[in-house]
Length: 261
Image (cartoon, rainbow, N blue to C red; front, side, top):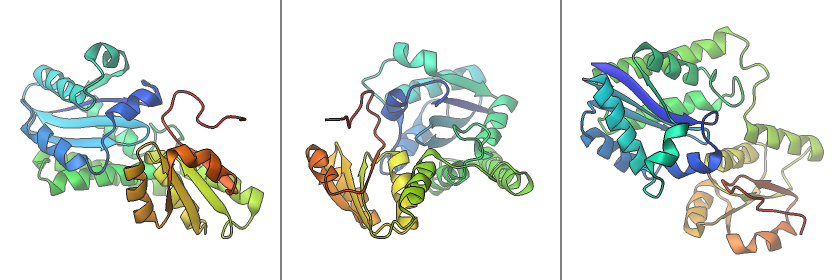
């Protein structure tokens, strides 16, 4: 049995490409079920965050397994062909795949070194795969060890002393400007991983009035319900800005969504 990893992250691919391959929470069970049935794959885990989409698998034959896992990854974004994806992809096996997973869990591979979210995201990815019986003896052992290593790095080193995520930094800046956020109105544009994380930080900082806008209005409604926020149609963003004290834009657009006009 061999462990392999295939993926793309913030170092290898632009955000607009990563977003196309991202697997949302609602899609994850179905994606895992397909991965479990995929040719040559014995065990698997899908790690999908705003900064990376990575597939970890256990296979009998490494070369065939890597090829099969790459083929699976392409299916996550049917409108993007292999030619466009290939330059941004990395493929690892054996000790290198395990080392990479440990670095990811320890936030050594994060955009912001030491950021606190990734360890929880790794654990959640593993928990969902375990729940749907996609992991087995090998990945169970490796994933548990990766989570344990991530915890040790955070508690036994100073890596997390000054580390923040990008969304956390945005909220901290807002707190410095306004001191008290409890009476402020926030408009959040975009609800990818970064947007949802920002919303949680804002609510944790005391904000009680959060508006959420997204191109997919149904998704905005769904996330707003979970966060006790107010969904806003995307075409009303500029109108709602007039009543907002803070506007955070966290979309995957390759151009400016909010401009001077």
